[in-house]
Length: 101
Image (cartoon, rainbow, N blue to C red; front, side, top):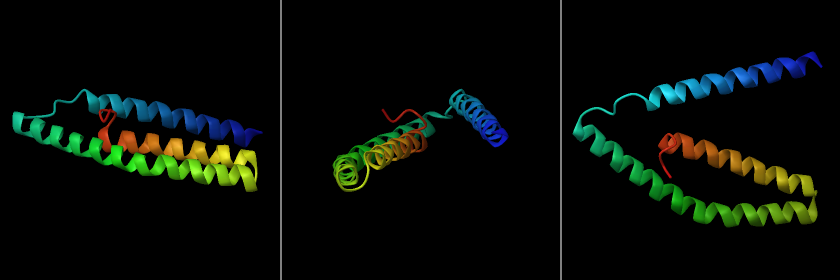
């Protein structure tokens, strides 16, 4: 039981540190006008990439989840979907720093 509390404390600390770093980076100036233009081009490219990627990934995740639910366990299918959602959140934050959408 003590291991559970240690893991939860580490997880909470990690999320607090993540939030602090994220908002600290968001408050920095983007630089000169040229740097801002390049940053916007990168954001637009990331948005286009993720939009096209999710058009393929969403149906693939749905198909695999249905297969898991049908032939394995219901929990396996929902766990797979949860993992895909967490991975998508990581992609959105990593690719755009929260500014993709």
